[in-house]
Image (tube, rainbow, N blue to C red):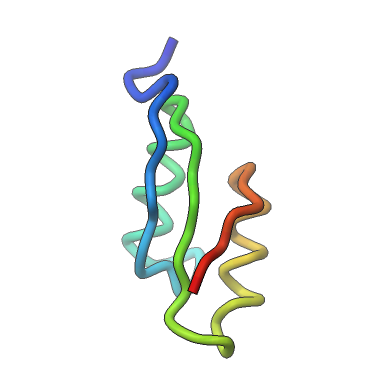
Length: 62
C-alpha cells in the first residue's frame, strides 16, 4: 500500500515528460494516488491528455 492510496491529486503545470509536474505526477501515481490534470489551453491539451493516459488517468480539465 502506497502513501497516497485512496487519495486524489490535481496536477497542474504539466507541459511535457521533462517538466517538474510530470515527475511529481509520476511519483504520486506510484504511491497510489488517483490523478486529474489541468491544461493551460487547447494548444497543450493533446499533450496533457497523452501524459494523463500514460499515468492511468482520463481526467483533463481546462
